[in-house]
Image (tube, rainbow, N blue to C red; front, side):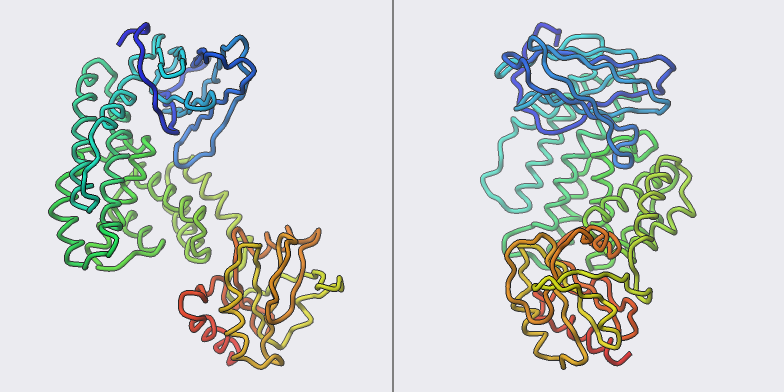
Length: 452
């Protein structure tokens, strides 16, 4: 497709990839027009190590419907970035250092031009071909797998047309990203097989006979490790392979060990870093992830991966773990009187951090009736000063010190529960959700703390 041709434009959030070692004073220029967009903000984000390093960004306002960005050279093998010009005016593609790309957005059209336009068309047209594959009439797992298989073939047919015209390095990453995204959706069918669920034997048959034979042939390598959607696919596949072997869902630690055993080199470093960062962001078990991060720092060779995990590991270590003294604090009660945690030494304390969406009132009320108030104290900490339900126990309010308390206790989401033993040391940092079993497991933990 030449720069004057028009494409109908329906794109989801993605990233624009700039590849190859960056030479000194080598820049990438991205410019374009957005019809009727004067004064609208345009932003571009880029990553030096997708899935590992944080994004950098630039933003500008459209002047006479036009925008232009010049990204600085960085001494890395690849840069990935994503352009957002508002509404449906988003784009991602592939460029070499020194390339330029011009994007002309219309109401329902897009015109590409510039030295790097050809490298941007491959993933775009491949995904457009996938969108044209009709959805299955039936919404069962086998039908969805067949649909994704057709999408993979449609994308492959488009990408094959670019195999000889694109540099091998770029073609390999483009293909890994496009096919990896669809393959990950295919593997997800294993976990959402049907509304009613299926047996383990049926899941094994679905995976071994239907899903695995349909997965794309993408060779794991240091090059494909640059494709973030391919990394996501490998994480999904590792979890599925573990499930098929062990017949059980895997913990963060188990998937970490699986990846560590089955991969090597830069791909292993990036895949493990991506898995740890995703698990931390999802609120996984802090102690388990801290142990994994400690082990990872003893084996990792890739500099950017080491830096990313070392930074997060430092934050995890600042949190709490079983056996360490509970961080002291003093917060006002409902009457405004300061209450310190140290007041309750000699008792088991359940700390309950919550916001307005908390659903634990029935369960905690039921658990509270099981214990002598002289031995066990429930402390409920309202973290956003919204109207509060009547919880059994002591109600404390957020004040100017609440941010420090949350950081000390490593609270990143609500509700959060922590059990403090009679000796003032942490007994449990992430007890089980009491709504899952009417509080039975949490009550057992409190009983065990009393016997300590």
